[in-house]
Length: 225
Ligand code: G3P
Image (cartoon, rainbow, N blue to C red; front, side, top):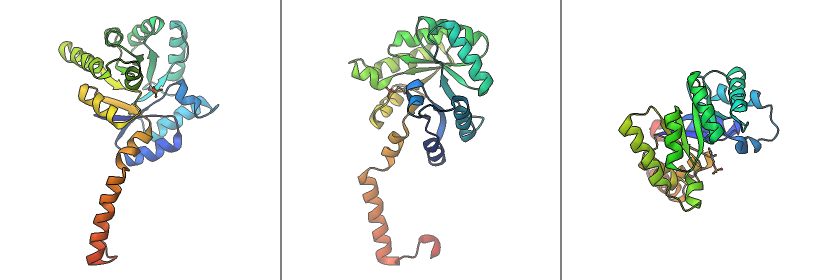
């Protein structure tokens, strides 16, 4: 299992990369919007410098047509670096862009995936990662667990080199389900990770351990004994 941060908030990326085993960072234009009118490439380069050169940084194209997506990809590779995973929505224009970018050896992530067949096509077009939108599918009455399981089964059966990068989560239970269905990787808002480790029952348990220790040893910590 790998955890990615689905945010462009620099302070959050710094903080959560320090605390959690974060494998990389993803964003999309809606996530970028939350940061305001940033100096986009400087911002993405800052994310790269925070996470380091070895971790995947996924950045989405904004053009809607194949040629524009390819120009966006070239710009990302030039102004950020050659290791960027170029996120391309799996549309009619997008799938053509995925094929062309893979022919050039670019890392590509097929995104905005709402069905198994859309994912299969992205796999066959050569996408390195595919991003099924878990919460959005659930909201539509679809079966995100089954769709991710189908993607995982085809990857296993035909040994595609594709990674399932599940996205669009609103709670940790959805992340559990995506991993159990076969997603190797999940990208999420940092608040979901924080929520996992800050539940009241956890802090209450730790407070009880602390009180019991101090009732016997006072303020002396284990290291100070
Ligand atoms: O990475 C895609 C994801 O950010 C979409 O999430 O919360 O807008 O459904 P959401």
